Image 1 (spheres, rainbow, N blue to C red):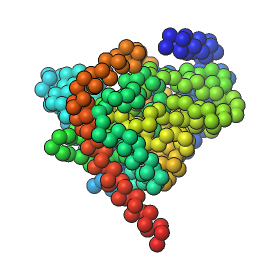
Image 2 (tube, rainbow, N blue to C red; image 1 turned 135 degrees about the vertical axis):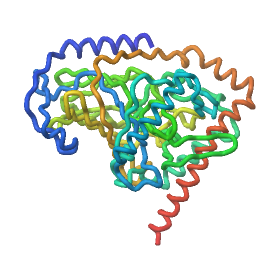
Image 3 (cartoon, rainbow, N blue to C red; image 1 turned 90 degrees about the vertical axis):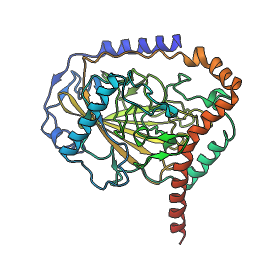
Image 4 (spheres, rainbow, N blue to C red; image 1 turned 45 degrees about the horizontal axis):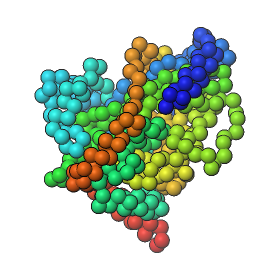
Length: 411
């Protein structure tokens, strides 16, 4: 771990040394970033690239998928104001320790005090972060993915959540992974539903993407913070805080010099990223991904596929002095019948104080976690079963949809 940090610090020192003060230059923003970008004068670096340097945060809460009973693309201003008021009321109660949150494994008052957020709640007007497909929902799985899921689910049937290190989530094992295309409930989405049983309650707000806890069906956004560091020919994107999107604090050093990608057989947890500029938009394409572990962990989101057929494309376009349009496309023909695209708004906040994550569980506590599970095997099995309940209910729905579509194709 110490040597990885030394390499990262050395690399960043070179990048920061190359960075210089930016100067604004008029430029035309790409149309996909919206009309506001077309009238904005982009700042430029001394070497002529659009300037994205700084600390960027996702402040807006938004449902990842459009709720099942919602057909509109946007909420009204009154509805957004009502969401903000309700969130502020819950937050005030949380500060007093009176907000009863049903959190991990349905524990009452889970994080009721430490879940308090000092910043005012913000909600997006769009009814889903997914902007394509137009219905705002995840595409269907392929039949191959259904079989892949069943195989991985069967690997832990009738066993606890602490039999082996791979039973523990990547965040607990201190493994950085490319977290953005990771979904809770094993990538199946929740379609705006609430899964409830006598043993387990699962809120639709928990089945969202990109980190940051939320409650009361509020959904979440791309939280970050993400630090962008630029030099001529490179962009460094650092995620300096751990989030529920899977994995730990990580960084990506993205070449922009047109070098060819590495061979497909060389795969790792954060993949291989290459970038280029399309007008004022930074486009980053990541391939060569592999998601760790052959099983579905009892908690912690995991990408539904193994990453071998995944192409993850991000687009960053500065739309104002303190705003950036961020969207990404997940194109994985081994998992989904079509690609899907997600859009978020990000805010520049260079005054935000980042608390670095020092992950220690995988180094110090893993033997204790596994020993505790083996000492109390019944509790470990109960913990694993609690997590299987929402997965099973949602999977049966997904499987029925896929089988129906497959039957229609064969007619």
